[in-house]
Length: 263
Image (tube, rainbow, N blue to C red; front, top):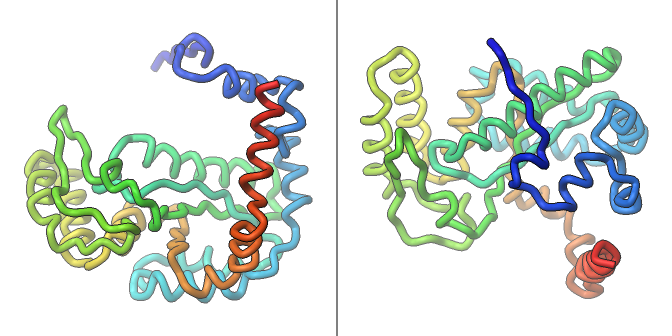
C-alpha cells in the first residue's frame, strides 16, 4: 500500500506555536522540558526514576478494576509491574465519549501502546506500561454525549451532572439501541455489539461503563485504565491543590509563561 506524507504546515490546521514545537524550534526550548525524541525520552527516564506512591496506585487500580482482572491477565500483570522501580508509564487521557466517540480517542490510546513497545525495544532492561487516564471529572457533557456512525449522529439525551464519570447510565438505553442497530451483522459487529451492551447496560456509572469497554478493546495490550475520581488518590494531591488555591501558583506560572510566549 502506498502512503503519502505531507508536512503539518501544509494542512493549515495547526497554530504557529504548535508547528514550531513539532519542528523543535530552539526559540521554544525554554518552554519545553524534553523534546519527544529518543534522546529526550532518555532524559525523561532519568528524571522519573523515583516515584513514591507505587503501592497506593497499585492498590487503587486493583480496587477500581475489581472482577475485570480475572479475565485480563496482561492488565493484572502490568499492575503488579508498577511496583518495580524500573517500570515507567506512558500515559494518554481523554473524556468519556460514549461508544469511544471520535477516532482520535482510539488513536491516542494506540499511540501510547505503540510508544511503550518502541521504548521497550530501545530499553529492554526497562518496562513501559501504557495508561489511559479517564477524565471522569470533566464537566463538558455536550462534548461526550454523542457520536457519529456512517454519518448518523447518535446522542445520549439526558441532563448533565457536574462530574461526567459519576453519571447514571440508566437513560442511555435508546442510544445503545441506535448504535448497535447501525453496526451490522459481521463477526466484528457482533463482538462490538456485545461489548457495548455489556458496558453501558450492565454498569451503573459512565466511568465503569467506559472502563469495561476500553478494557475489552485493549486488555490484550496490558493497557491500564485510571479513574482519578478516587478519594485515596486525591489524598496524595491535597498539598498541590491547597497550594494552588491559596497561592495561585498555576495561574501565576501560566500567566508569566504566556506573556513570555507572546513577547
